Amino acid sequence: MASDGGASPRPISPSERIDAIDVLRGVALLGVMAINVVTEFRVSILEQFVAREPAASPVDHAIETILTFAVEMKAFALFSLLFGTGLAIQFERLANSERRTALLVRRLTVLLAFGLLLCLIWNGDILTEYALAGLIVLPLLFGPRWLVGVAALASLGLYLAMQAFPVSGLWPSAAAMTQAVAEAHRIYPTGSFLDVLALRLREIPLFVPLHAYIFPRTIGLFLLGAFAWRTGILRQPPRHLLFSIAAGCIGLGAALTLCHAAGFIAAGRIGALVEPLGTVLLALGYGAGIIGIASTAERGCSAGLRRWGGWHSPTISCNPSSSAGSSTATALACSAGSVLPTRSRSVSPSTSDRCFSAPGGCVITDTALSSGCGAR
Image (cartoon, helix red, strand yellow):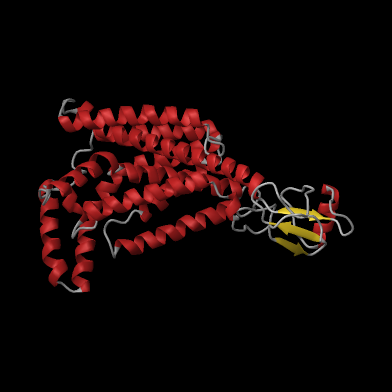
């Protein structure tokens, strides 16, 4: 959204969008969908926290292994980063609007309402958590950039501390989750809608602790995404810096994740930090790498189009009385017909290329090389 003064906000045009961020958002959503298909879209979302059945085939086992170590939780963390970036972009674009706070609070409140309704349909809802985290992050966006960065680190530090020093009795027991999964398997196939709804309400005490453990991370990643936007690294991506961040974060994150999976890092408080820290680092590395690749591809395409346009752009020659016209004549003549030439040149009329008469005395040719048309 953009606004001028006290004017009503308006949707941005496609040319104002940052393609690299859209690409990253699409990749994050693809990862979320893949994880949801494999683990979340089950009879009960709690089933992923109890003993899993072995994969039916080597291919299934390979896919689950890749998703578990490379995508699971990383895609969700990446999407949290992007949500924070989007919130910061909206906050900035509404800077001149007197209704900025009211509009953003209204959006987050509507998101919260949808999330609460979705909880009655599916117990894997994330909208409620995102809305509540957004309402906490929003006041911090009024502060300076350093405050956003410090708050991000503090929130992520709290998240890691909760993993190393878990609150006693907060996380549901394995027996309680196993019982809930068995009850879900019994009610979903045979129960009525009211039976299913009652089951979901009974499951709420089991889901609240899960969200409580992840909530500080969500806030921290929101703030980190907003901080990244404030630094300008997403507006004009410095490719060398992004690729350096990607290599460092992915390398360290992958090392921590694999060492934890292989049992090289002992259990205990340090072991409890390894996997969540590796997840955050991998998400940051993925984000930096994808932004760097997308921006590089975008610049390459733009340069290619400029080179292609130099040879293939329509040649426009405007002169009602002679066979060659100047660039000044071209601009004046074509303005009457709303035709804006990419390039003007005087050429010989002896050509077999197709020429098109345009309003205002312009003649346009679709020549691909060096031939063209004079005025006709």
